[in-house]
Amino acid sequence: MTNKIKYFIANWKMNGTNKSVNLHKKIVKFSKKKNFNSNIVYCPPITLVRSFQKIFKKSKIKLGAQNCFYKDQYGPYTGQLSPKMLKESGCDFIILGHSESRQQGDNNNIINQKIINSINSRLKIILCFGETLNEKRKKITNKVISRQISQALKNVKNKNNILFSYEPVWSIGTGNVLNEHDLKKYLLFIKKLLISKHKIKKPNILYGGSVNSSNIKTLKNINNLDGFLIGSASLKVNKFIDIIKKTYN
Ligand code: 13P
Image (tube, rainbow, N blue to C red; front, side, top):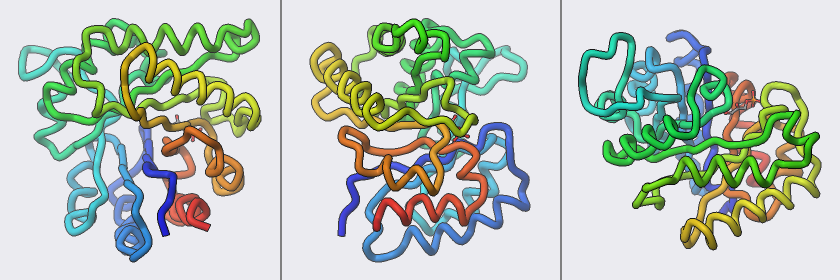
């Protein structure tokens, strides 16, 4: 049995302790089940990457970072981590453009620089974009998404290692998810945009924002959706596994 949902990505944000990492050992066994053919990626705080590496050592589960500094390599930048350092510490993925990072000052130009440097350091990008509630009310979602993607991809040559994660800001951490009709409409818009304007033959598109084990039953069947970026529901291993299991039923 195969699953159309290829990616389950856990965004732990600023959460987790070494003790909580150990509770996630359970997902290793689950990921080795015969019919399981999706990718699981954990993006914990960097402080927990070592602990996760230990429990995921003999599995295909990958690790990712949640952001980086806009310059690569090494240098006099107190408190910063470069894409190169993140790759060296065992991360294969990196979340960029998350609305919570945008709120901390990341703009489209900085995100673009981070993407270019992260690709140079062989990280796979999870690029987040999406409209605020205000922009949704003004009915400018398409315009916002289109601008965020275009500016993020400026001068990016190899776009094959980018996953495109649509995350409406008003949906994150609120329990509110787009209705099916709107989600389908925006996913189709994003797909067409990536294929026609950005010349990506088979873009991978994710959705993030209040995904949980109840709404997954509807979300999993939506066209043009290749995976999910999951925040709070990924912190508890049973909840996370439950979400994945329900996409296989
Ligand atoms: P929640 O699943 O907690 O709404 O967070 C979504 C998110 O921000 C994923 O990046």
